[in-house]
Image (cartoon, rainbow, N blue to C red; front, top):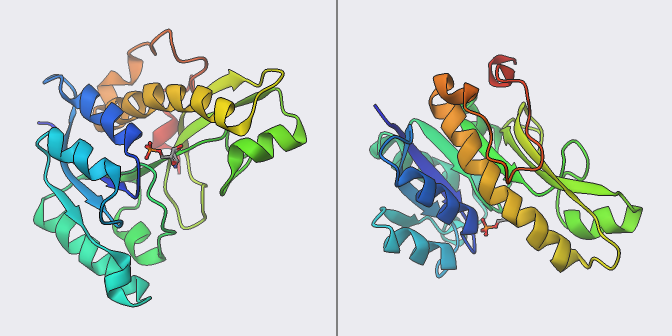
Length: 214
Ligand code: GRF
């Protein structure tokens, strides 16, 4: 039984595309059953439509700063589509305790840094500014604290001389596209946590039981 998974996006949708590509395999334990976007016209919506996945816009501006009402509308759609797992993939709204609470232990996020370093925005520029030599990305469970929660997978990349934030972002993004499908696969089917990570992932959380811990 494939776990019905929703992906929440705000923009480009390249991680959504990576998840959709992985889930095309009938053996993948999650089915991308819904895409929800808060930005009308976001390029990621076309990615969902091209894949034949229901894609909904729940525009936060229609709710006149009422975050609770906006999240209630999203939650209603998640329930209507019988969703079991939610993946945030470039969803640029900070969630309130309501939606986080609805999905405690069942909501994943991808963040473009090696958490707990560089939570928040502009991670690549901040990494360059302080001179770290390793940077990367993290898939983690979502909790009320921003970019916090149990780490499910990480991939590291080197910071190279002459890197700009854009160059570094592209190097990290390539790894995001590797570890998000992997993390979802392991999360949706715990038996698959034993499957070795692909060679293209520079570094992955080696603790297969990590997601059981609070
Ligand atoms: C990614 O870098 C992700 O880590 C961050 O937002 C970006 C989304 O990119 N949370 P995309 O929309 O998946 O291409």
